Length: 244
Image 1: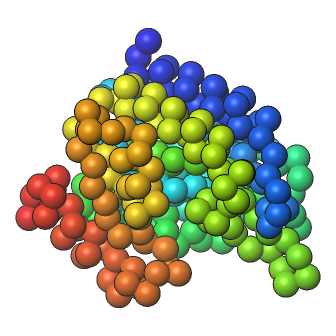
Image 2 (image 1 turned 60 degrees about the vertical axis):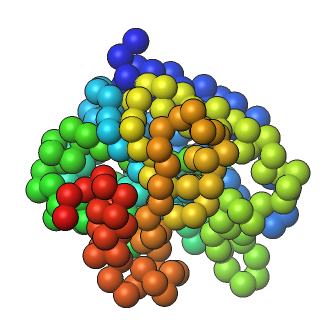
């Protein structure tokens, strides 16, 4: 199979395995874009996963206005549609919270993390073709976790899940990451944030690709709000991945 076919097979396997998981408090809603947004996700894998890569950037899990809307990792809508070049119909999660609706490519909210990440790549490489020639972007966990109560509807980061809920989830996502690495054969896996870096080290071990990290572009990070792009660029240059 080609790398993109291997990626699609692995993603479908993970989708089926995750569909059987249930999560306890504080989780009230779980969105799985590999299910309702499979069409654009598969298009992303076909379009940009067809060759091996030198660098794989690894995110943590979907944002509510990014991959949860359009199936593209860090998928801020304008970036996914206009620069990455992916657009396809998107359905709905089985249990949708009214304060976190899935509107697909009609979503008008911007995912700041995705806007920053893809914006840096666009500035550095100009075109998506140039970027994806040696790079790829993936997510470690393809699930969005929400907590809805009288205070509203909030994201739950994967590292906040109970130990009982996370153990099987992490084992399945570790196996999927190994399948992604086997398909793309990268020299580097770069965790976008410490959680993703830690999971990459755990899943891939000492015999896998080199592993590094860059600052997560989340607006919840004070450091990221002080010029994320220059900091991430400096980190990649220090690793020798990008030239100065």
